[in-house]
Amino acid sequence: MRRVGFIFVLMAALVAIRPLHGEEVHNEAAVVPSSLSETYEDWNVTCTADGSERRCTLSQRQFHKSGQHVLTIELHPAEAGGLQGRLALPFGLYLDKGISFAVDDAKGAKPSRFRTCIPTGCIVQLSFTDATVKSLRGGKVLKLGAFASDSEKEVAFSISLKGFATALDRTIELASKT
Image (cartoon, rainbow, N blue to C red; front, side, top):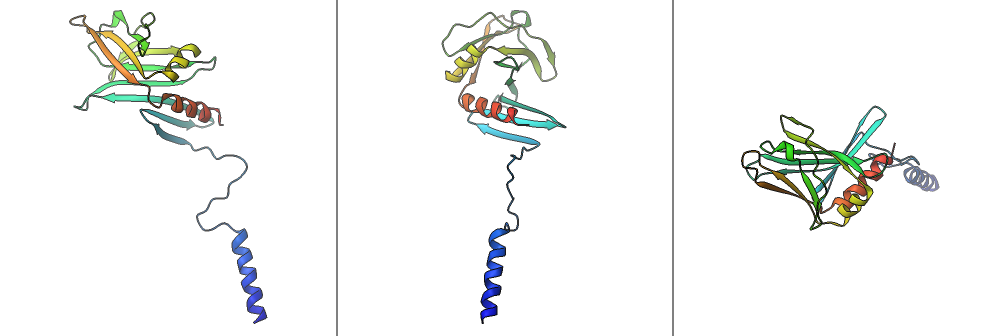
């Protein structure tokens, strides 16, 4: 009887110090996935790794109810501060007039020029200063103003900033992990 008790105690001790099947042992160093995709309200955070290089972005894609692509904005933290990225808009815009940006009801700055067009739409390179990023963090909507190429009438686009601050914080956090 005493031997059965000893074996029982020994088995209990082994089970207690050994992880259960399927349970991971956590090391001091954090494990960083090779790819990741998370959603924060209207924004997505995506990280991919190619060898030792890791790229994390926050983005938003919009589609018409018919399924047609309307716009995509993709941003990443810039080395010198602020954000850099790209905006893809549909064909049919007056490219020479560019596109203006405004957060909520603030007055927009000088329009940004289109860089090129690709099969999915026309591209605008983005560079937001720290002051603009602060406005984006506190804003509700990023308003875009463009013009139709055929009628030269103004065409408005809006990008929800719901979840932007949280998605940006998460992007910065993930980008800093190596």
